[in-house]
Length: 222
Image: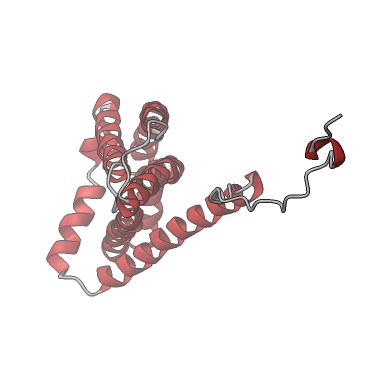
């Protein structure tokens, strides 16, 4: 009876082969992603605050005529008489800013452009506050904060939330360009557009609230 090698040695004594498949990139956990979100919001908030302080400093050194013109624009009571006009002004500004953040999300340079956007936004608000303070004193600054800055503060939180979504999209575009690969089908384009619609809805609700507060405070304080 013939005995084969497999019968005598039923087990394989070959050396284990090395796994040549490339390692998969590590996927960050939920805790790490949450930490990144907090750091990103802190970064944008700090940049906005730095721009605001810079705008305050620039407002002290600007031309007096420019400061008076800007203060008259903010403290003109005639533009706060009609609720519809105030709401339209607030929502149109919100629409333009959210659309700007959306376009940055579709750019590979969006991660760097978003801090610049918040820096410029803070500088503009700081310049307006300084102009109002130089012309109207502490009372004028409080009135300006209640009428103009409070609705803008509501919008700032919406912009910070939506900027995180735009940053995720911009990062995916940047990785595709750096790696020379095609755009993935799973890129969060639809999710970003859905978040954009939600941000517009929130901006409309906050603009309605801000317009009501502006009309009330302007009627009492101006």
